[in-house]
Amino acid sequence: MKILHTKEEVKSALLAHRKENNSIGLVPTMGALHDGHISLVKHARSHADITITSIFVNPIQFNNPSDLEHYPRTLEKDLELLENKGVDYVFLPEIEEMYQEETLLKFDFGYLENTLEGEFRPSHFNGVGIVVSKLFHIVQPDYAYFGQKDLQQVAIIKRLVKDLSFDVKVEVVPTIREKDGLAMSSRNVRLGEEERKAALLLFNSLNLAKDELLKGISWLEVKEKVLSKFDQEPLAKLEYFELVETDSLKKLNSFNPRELDDTKKYSVCMASFIGEVRLIDNLPIY
Ligand SMILES: Nc1ncnc2c1ncn2[C@@H]1O[C@H](COP(=O)(O)OP(=O)(O)OP(=O)(O)O)[C@@H](O)[C@H]1O
Ligand SMILES: CC(C)(CO)[C@@H](O)C(=O)[O-]
Ligand code: BAL
Image (cartoon, rainbow, N blue to C red; front, side, top):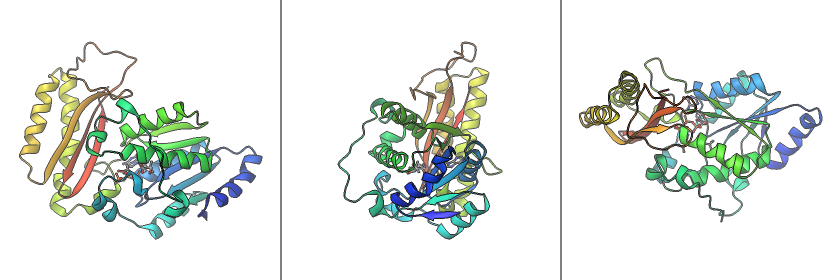
C-alpha cells in the first residue's frame, strides 16, 4: 500500500494503471475507520482493479467548530487496517493541498440540501460538494463508494455527478451496524457508557417506525410515539424524525402500505444529539 500526499503523486501513481485499462475505485473517508468504512473498501476491492481510499477531515463541511475540534483522528490504526484489507493507495492530503486559499465556490443543491441535515447543518453540503468534486477531479475514479447511512449525502452526490457530468459511477453500500443495531459511526467513540445505551434509541425508533408503518399505523401516530420516547430520555435531543421518499428526499405525511408505488422507495431518517455527540441514522421502509 502506498501513501500519496499530493495531487501530482496521485496522478503519476494512477497513470500506469490507466494505461493498462485498470478500473479505479475511490472510497472517500474522514478517517477514524470502522467496519462501515471497511465494507466500502470491500465493495471497491470486489468491483475495481485498483482501490484508493482518501482520508481527509474536510474543515469546510463542519458547521460546528467544536465538532471539528473533537472529530476522532486515529491515523496510524487506519493505515494498518487499510493495508490489511488490501487497499492499493491512500490519499492523505494536508489542508493546504486541498485549499491553497479559501475557496470562493458555493454549491447550492436547492431542495436536496435545504431539508433534513441541511436545516441543522447550514453550508455542510456545500463543503461536501466541493471536497467530493476535488477528489473526483484529482483521482478520476471509475467508481466511488458511499454509505447509505448518509442518505442525503448520497442523493446530493448523485446529483452532483449528473449536474457536473463526472464520469464516475456512484455505488451505495448498506449501513453496517453494531450487534445491538447502532449504526457504526466514527463519532460513536465519543459516547460515554450511559450515552452509548441511550444511542440505541435511534435504531429502536427507526425499527418501530418501520414495523408500525407496514402494519398500517398512521405516520403521525408513529412520529408522536417516537417523539414522546425522546422526551423521556434526558441524554437525547432529537433534531428531526422524518418519513421521506428516498431519492427525492421529499417529506411525506402519510404512508399506505396497501398503495405503494413500485417505482419509489421510502425511508425514515433522523438526527439526534446524544449528550454532545450528534448522530444520524435511517432505515429503508420499502
Ligand atoms: N455504518 C456505516 N456503514 C456503511 N457506510 C458507512 C457507515 N458509516 C459511515 N459510512 C460511510 O463511510 C464514508 C465515510 O464516512 P465518514 O468518514 O464520515 O464516517 P462516519 O462514520 O460517517 O463518521 P461520522 O458519522 O462520525 O462523520 C461515507 O460514505 C459514509 O456514508
Ligand atoms: C464524503 C466525505 C468523505 C467528504 O468529506 C464525508 O462527507 C464523509 O465521510 O461522509
Ligand atoms: N459522514 C458525514 C460527514 C460529516 O458528518 O461531516
